Amino acid sequence: MLITIVVELKDQPGQLLKALEPISRLGGNIVSVYHQRDKITPLKRIPVEITIQIDERKVEDLIEAIRRNGVIVRSYNEVRLTATTSLLLIGHIIHTDLGDTINRIDSTGFAEVVDMHISMPQLNQPSTAMITISATSDDNLKKAIDILKKTCREKDITVIEPLELQ
Amino acid sequence: MIKIAIFGFGAVGQGVAEVLLKKREALRKLIGDFRVVAVTDSKGGIADEKGIDLSKALEIKRSRKRLPEGTTTLDVINSLDFDVCIEVTVTNIENGEPGLTHIKECLRRGINVVTSNKGPLVVAYKELADLAEKKNAKLMFEATVGGAMPIIKLVKNDLAGNEVYAIKGILNGTCNYILSRMEKEKLTYDQILAEAKELGIAEADPTYDVEGIDAAAKLVIIANSLMDMDVKFEDVERVGITKITPEAFEVAMDKGYTIRLIAEVDKVEGILRVSPRLIPIQHPLAISGTLNAALIKTDLAGDVVVVGKGAGSKETASAIISDLIELYRCRT
Ligand SMILES: NC(=O)c1ccc[n+]([C@@H]2O[C@H](COP(=O)([O-])OP(=O)(O)OC[C@H]3O[C@@H](n4cnc5c(N)ncnc54)[C@H](OP(=O)(O)O)[C@@H]3O)[C@@H](O)[C@H]2O)c1
View 1 (cartoon, protein in one colour):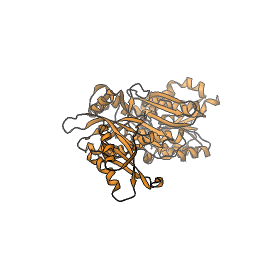
View 2 (view 1 turned 135 degrees about the vertical axis):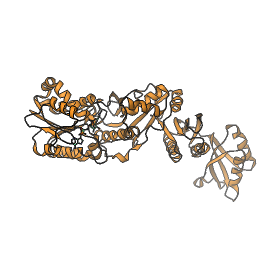
View 3 (view 1 turned 45 degrees about the vertical axis):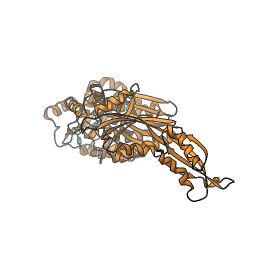
View 4 (view 1 turned 180 degrees about the vertical axis):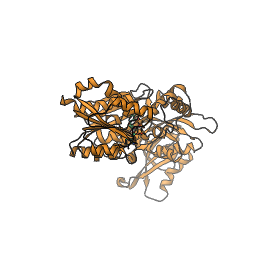
């Protein structure tokens, strides 16, 4: 799932690494890191907002590990995905690096592929997939669809969009 | 006395001629006396200011495949006195010809034009509309979009006062036939295309239909004439139906959807495209066979849906005749 963590870092070299190291160790993907320099705390710490994609069951361990590294975790929240739609893909979906196709959506930080139903093709025939994408808002859902369309154009995959985004 | 010239004597031109013959009396009551003073095809024509014998013209065209040589369309425009031209020559969406010249020359002389020919309108809608206004002539084109399905006059007359901000439609009967058959029979695109060719629903070279070119041309006419936009054919994002598989229908149906080729223009979202889309099975646009349909989104009336036969000589003639009546009804 997608979460944002806000940590407070001392303004010294090597601090960010302490916060990031457990993320990769626990198999999370860093989507974005945003230094809120304009919100420096009275104790001169810089709040940093980190958005990551990680297995839901590892979130508690992750927070624990970051704290053990001596970093203050101010808050962490699941990013709520409120807009969802399903699209159909037709083409050589698997042979054109499906992982990469999905990752281009998941790595946006505002949208992710929440469901995928692939109908297995006959040998060398194009396959079909129903892909469900969720995003943090309708606008971001549209952006995610545009990214998907662009990716699929590169890979010669036909995208069938829904008539309306529900 | 309304003097009519018919340019183009193929399926639609002949269909119009038949209706004019068959419904002569009913039409007279609606628009008053009329006579056809010329018909032309690509190689020749028949013209007489006193009126020509339409059934004989039909007979000649059908038995000899061509009208007598010697009279060209431009001769008719330049030398004959007539009030309205029915322009039903071949479509060319690249340069609009020969229809574009026919329409311009008629409008320039203050002659009203009724057409089913998309080409000139796709290439030069604004120019033609301006010319018509300047010359106090009328340009009527119900038959260019959706065949017998009413949409142009529906929006201009019955929905007058509304702002139309989006239209989503099925504007190509051939594609709709192929997709709805694939949905039912679970056969491949190629298999159904072969069937459609055999039935005369698809052309030998189906590119114009299946790549969404025809639908995109109609979308451009809709956007420019009904939504006050100024778009070109090249502005349409276009994906055809050739890559769609039976499995795609299976996967879609599992989730309660079917697939149709939808032409969509949306002023608010900045959308102008023709592409296959997932449609909920109970949606009014989830229609089958060669039908056309359009969902018109307006500010006052809300959503309006129309469905009708999108092609065929009689159906297209219906739209042309309704334009003709609209032009002349008030005179009686
Ligand atoms: N058929 C439909 O269901 C339908 C529906 C909506 C709109 N339309 C449109 O309506 C128009 C006519 O369609 P159609 O099905 O009747 O096509 P068609 O059967 O191919 O007929 C086209 C006619 O145009 C004639 N023509 C070509 N160049 C000409 C010229 N310079 N001067 C006079 N005539 C010329 C052809 O002459 P020859 O006979 O000598 O070849 C032919 O008679 C097309 O623009 C089409 O896109 C058709």
